[in-house]
Image 1 (cartoon, rainbow, N blue to C red):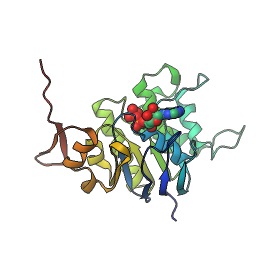
Image 2 (tube, rainbow, N blue to C red):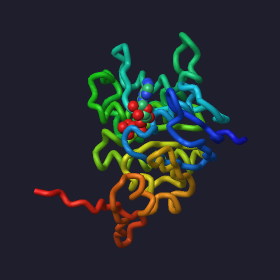
Image 3 (cartoon, helix red, strand yellow):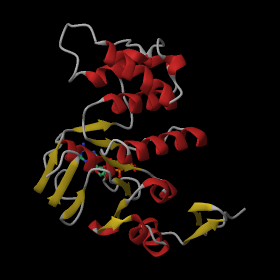
Image 4 (cartoon, rainbow, N blue to C red):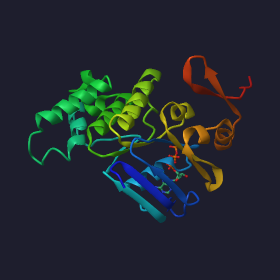
Length: 250
Ligand SMILES: Nc1ncnc2c1ncn2[C@@H]1O[C@H](COP(=O)(O)OP(=O)(O)OP(=O)(O)O)[C@@H](O)[C@H]1O
């Protein structure tokens, strides 16, 4: 197994009983996996199981190179500055009670610049908006050594432009740095834009996993969301949009 790989075999996960039929998929380095599915179906619980926070009820999760996670919401108990929060991502590199090296602080500055939040470096993390906090936690993930990164709804609090910044970073992390990425989202367009592979969680414990083109089809998405929808192409633009065929009654 290569660094940055994550293999899930016959995994049963959940709380009192499994949420899904045995789940198997293989995220290789350089892959971007999107996890799609309705509210409360088990996306966050899956990520918690992959990191080992939650014990599997059966089956196996194998990983090489370490797993880092960007949670949906982060509460920090002390008034840390934004740059300190990102520096925590270098914990494996900075020895306890020693000063960070120049390389560590450079990486932190670079990550803040990549996310267009360098101007917030000395602000207190808890004083930021939800979306700004989300960007800081993604910056922290950028500077970690973990070769597999899990991101729980990384775009949920972001405006349209910042969603694209984060999706571009996800793509860069996979393709340029050859990390393995798994992210959850409620927007199937995000999967179509950046995910090489998709895990689609369906009702009644069913699931589908494989290359995004073959999984995120109109038919499968309609089944997942219980809604008719169409993929609509835009000229000179690679990614189709998803339009729900739903009319609001007035
Ligand atoms: N600590 C817990 N103990 C028992 N059941 C839980 C616990 N946390 C979550 N659940 C249940 O597990 C199921 C999956 O929850 P999870 O948070 O993984 O869903 P999700 O797909 O991430 O949802 P959303 O899209 O709304 O964020 C839900 O039915 C939820 O009520």
